[in-house]
Image (cartoon, helix red, strand yellow):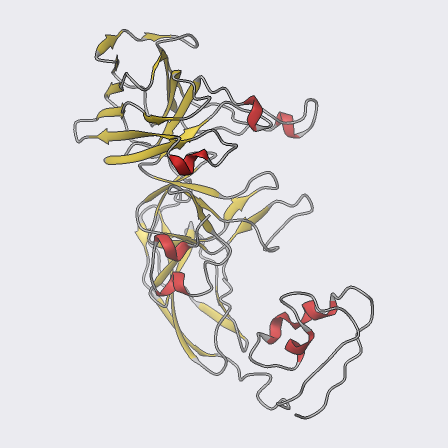
Length: 408
């Protein structure tokens, strides 16, 4: 897990706006649901404020495609779904479905790919139980993916380097290639020998094209959740026979490979768009909520603020918090549909004054209750902390809190 600024360092990620999302490995962006936005009684909600770095990103569960360099809003998140997006070009190592590490099939290696241009990934492995890796008992494998302008995809797995006690050298290989269409031709080479691939649903040295697979395979039998269809994008599945991975490299070539580009279904309406008509904004000391009249032929709205574009806004308002009191801010709002974007409507506001501007300073506080780490009782009267979080101070173990306040 890594903070966003470690992957995409800029003024926006250096602030607090991306504190509720993170990178998991080099390719996954995870944006948990951390607050109630428009949740229904079943817990289905949306996620606002997902920052996407530049590039192409995919919803991991559906394949819906998004272009980065923006901030997604109204991202549908039913109760079962954690918003997870995967970067274009990703090479993802996987294992067989399991409930604990002892069930992992170590004679089978699995890779899921989202081919786009030239990318690579180095797979690391060791015994998983000791610290012998510190003395060199480990193994690494370089995997490369190259999708050229002629729609030829070449995936190469180099010979594995290194070894460790208990390492299984003979392993089969399975590829899941995310795509938009059935390919023209597939060929494979293992250890320098060309392998004939047969189109079939199972077996070694076979491949199949799956238009849309239901990835909801592990729900409780007989439950309502089991009946839910979760359709992933099209995939090419390739299964190669076992080989000695320390002695034999593997290469897969796919002719007529189509890069994944599945509609995210945000653009459907057509027609000329005018500049939105603004309503009175909700202006507080630390937040501003721009509002506007809904437009009949708009699919969604965008707001430009502080050098960022907040997109896919399906409601006619959006909350901006973590602002400073008594400060001028400028926003721009526009509508978007499948024919393009309308003109911007500017909005200038000044946040309200600091509600603690005239509060008495220099007080100290103690409590008979045990301090809760991160929300110590002294924060109640120490204004260097965010006063909006003071409600947490009431959640002390031990019941009521007695305060003893005195000037310093």
